[in-house]
Image (cartoon, rainbow, N blue to C red; front, side, top):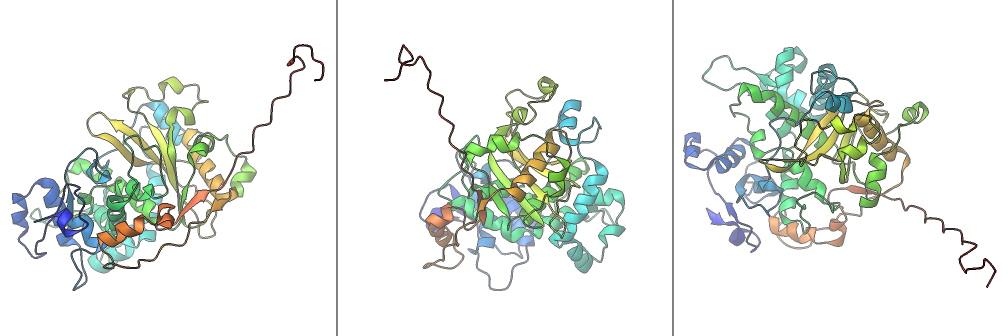
Length: 431
């Protein structure tokens, strides 16, 4: 083990670099602390081209281990990959427009999950490497994204982890950038910068979610699979990420329902798109609901549920795919602290449905400022954390060039001046 400051950039962030052989006996991992063992196991099971250095960007997240410090980057924040926070009937009506008992409508999510499998390339990998056809799996196996092994001695096939590993390169890069970014996420996720999408995407799942041979509690498979699907969908939108400035976030999140004519005209810039903005309280999004007071019934009043954006999908002709949308949510867990996750939601006239249509309308009708040209690395070892840290300080990088971030380009018109009162000078006569 080496001190991370010595190995990389001379800055003490309480991190270590662990050097080990990918062929080491897995049972030796029991000697390490759990979070270290998980990271090592992920690195051991990741296929690396011959000759790749430990300090390539792909290796950084697997080998650089953060110490548990509250003020550190999102690497130490717990990832919400073990379940969604849900409430009662009013909560379900907000997301799905009905009082159903399910936290996600099964038929809609099944269709959405299959699309993510196909678009990510996981369907092809499943067939080529394991000889399995996704559509031939049972409904339960597709829902849990898990294929049991023939015998009890070996773990089954974790299809969710297989899907996530198709995004390993982007996820690892996000983690590496979040570590060296000049701007760090605030505790309440306010003051978002264009580059913060890296930290938010990276924090959607924990590194252990990528581990293929991890034995999961059967009760955790569903939530693990849902987190894998939603996170993969977010990474499918890496080429079409959009930031709404702070002063416009509330207006966009609380826009009235679109007309049918405008809904029919909606077009997205790509197959997948993601929107990000300052936290908007969920109560503000649903402010016109008669059941506002019961929306979060049973939830901790200090949990601060808020909306941060969404991930949307489009058909090949760029028309909006209204099968399902994913709303980026944040809340404060009483034990785990601040967390964020992607909540599935249906399109419609209910609270979350209007919100998804509003985001799609912005992507269709609004003017967006294109990201600047990414800066070129001029010196240093290609792919090193030190070189990435130097790049991150470039003005164009701070503006979101490396994340390909588009910014909503809208300046509200100035407020009209108040009419001069006739009695302003006491008599009403001209001066």
